[in-house]
Amino acid sequence: MINHPEKILTVDNFAEVTHKEKSSVFIGQVYHCETENEAANILAPIKKKYYDATHHCFAFKLITEQFKYSDDGEPNGTAGIRILNAIKHFNLINVIVVLIRYYGGTKLGVGPLGKAYYTSVYNVLEEAKKVEKVLFQKVIIRADFKYISHIHRILSNHNATIENSVYKEKVIFECYIMPSELGKITFQLTDISKGEIKIVDTEVNYYR
Image 1 (cartoon, one colour):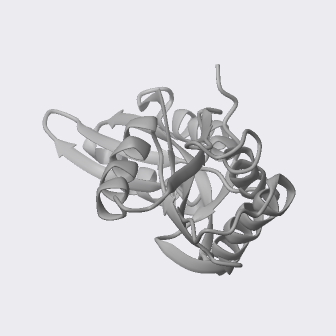
Image 2 (image 1 turned 180 degrees about the vertical axis):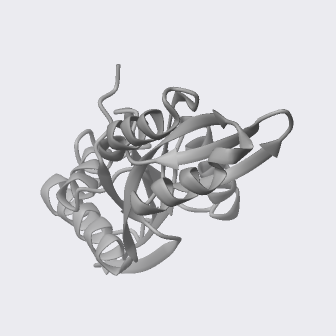
């Protein structure tokens, strides 16, 4: 079971920085990414667009504790792991960084090559707009109509939001609640309705 942190730091959107080392050109790109499939869908068009590049190295790190990196033909330890280390340095989660290298004809050597990759990643991550996102849990609340105003008030007091509402025999609210506030909200709703309001934690987590 994954222990999701209450807050994460990630990138808000795409960023790109170009770094030149001797005659080689390194194009660093960073994207927000939440799944391995999404990472694959990001990589595919990059490889197609930069088909003439010498290497397409990358690393990603996800909230699911998954990570992956690739040297794409560069000497072992010079590219992929350097990219991952830079991601960790910035404490970022749910990101993929791609380094596109055009070899210019001058060999850099293992040490300088690794440094060039790390510098390229560091530069693009420093440039990227970073955002802090807070963990919310998806919770379903079922209640009689007479409790609607109480539910709105209690949720609002605890920074919870209602994402969807269904009005039938009872009102059904699809809510997003911070884990640290769920116990307080549950207690207050149960107390005010003498247990008539039903709260179901779906165990679905969402960062926003």
